[in-house]
Image (tube, rainbow, N blue to C red; front, side, top):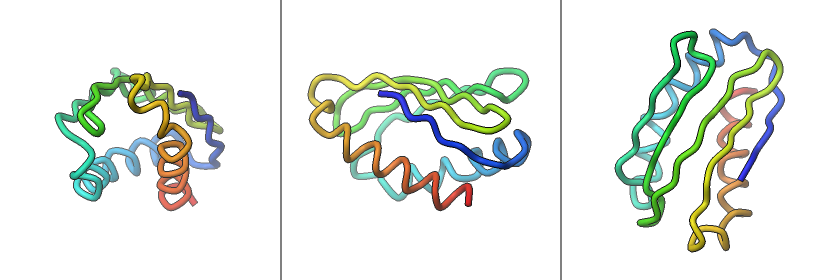
Length: 99
């Protein structure tokens, strides 16, 4: 699954917002999310993650660009049926976080 989302924030502001947002996202969706792990690269432009969603292990990365965020992640077969809903939830959160 891939999502490209345009924004007009600095990378520093983008990193700050995402870093502060992750704990609340995990808490809000705790019934579906388990074992979240995140790792930022040295210049804070890429986030690697792994998480269990509805008991399915998935991983991916988030790239922070000057004008967009690129989210790429694997969806196990059992989650593929929910890919539309997952994209909608992610996009809704990005709308709230970055606008």
